[in-house]
Image (cartoon, rainbow, N blue to C red):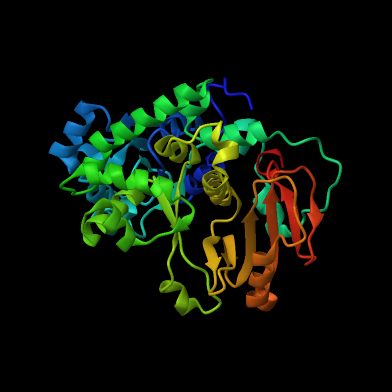
Amino acid sequence: MDVSHGWHPRHATAPLKTALADTPVVCLLGPRQSGKSSLVRRAFPGRAYLSFDDANVLAAATADPAGFVAQLSATVTLDEVQRAPAILPAIKLSVDRDRRPGRFLLTGSANLLLLPTVGESLAGRMEVVSLHPLTEAEKEGKPGRLLAALLQGSVKPRLGGTSADPGNLRDRILRGGYPEAVRRPQQARVRQWHRSYVDALMERDAREVANLRNLDHLARLLTLLALQTAQLLNVETLARQLAIRRETVQHNFAALERLFLVRTLPAWHSNESRRLIKAPKVHLVDSGLAATLTGVRAEDWITHRERLGHLLESFVVQQLVAQAGWTDPDLHFWHYRDKDQVEVDLVITRGRETWGIEVKAGATVTGGAGAGLKRLAERCGKAFRGGALLHGGTNSFLLADPRVLAIPMMDLWTR
């Protein structure tokens, strides 16, 4: 993996252009420092551009939102719009009078639809496109078509691949996908960037998107969740560990979701009504950030296999969720765990169609591998479309169920 590139083409560009062609307001949402500003300025150089990180622009928009919007160019990009939520009702009124497509391109480092009062202003009047931290496919300049191939059933057995490089996978997990971290050649400098990034989020962004009395609780919760990434979310346990009230944990967790630092995967069940009452899994969005927060380093690859396994699972979930953004917006993501503790790391659904993904760090796939996928197939019946066991080796081959293949992890960024 070459970490020296200054710019990586982003696969979110295509869905962003499609949305702007027929929608008046399009919002590119994603974590701060994930590359939103660079994308919109490179992809749409002819649009007027204003950033609310500029104190003068922010002051003008806050003082007179309607007047500010009235003076904007016919097509405009407004960057970091979560800093000026007062302009969103003014944008709504402007669009209600003139619904030409492509008028407003917004970017936000907080999930606007989860912010109080903001979602109400925007709901039904804009299309949202997600920008994630860099995927491994984007780093390599590849189209990132593994998810599409799985959905199409076009992945075929393939033997005789080159030798796997465990160090390569380890570096990808520990580095993560924030562009600035990707550019840094040494892991020590990557970790320093991650620490500075979290400090900056806590000092500014968290205050803007969450009404929290104590931001120390937020930072401590983020670290604790990093230690528990790819595990079931238990709010009561978190409250005890942090010695704070359950409601405080819930409020802080919601703030971390708004900042695109964590995501939850609901529990899948064949009975849709029962999906609402089972515990979700929690994942940090960026595996590199999780590794820094928990002190995991390259030398821990052998001695802390379980923790690295959780980081790897979160890493794979992030890659596939990101690929969904340019593959199929109708996909939904879950996890599966039944009363016998049989698990599937990632369940993907489209309507009733269901696919399963398991993650295995090792290069050797034993005869008992894929037990969770087999159980999921039994639960789904005819709705089961296929599954994949992503592993650290180099060969693709069928498991016991002809609908399930073992697939090299590297196909996430080479296919």
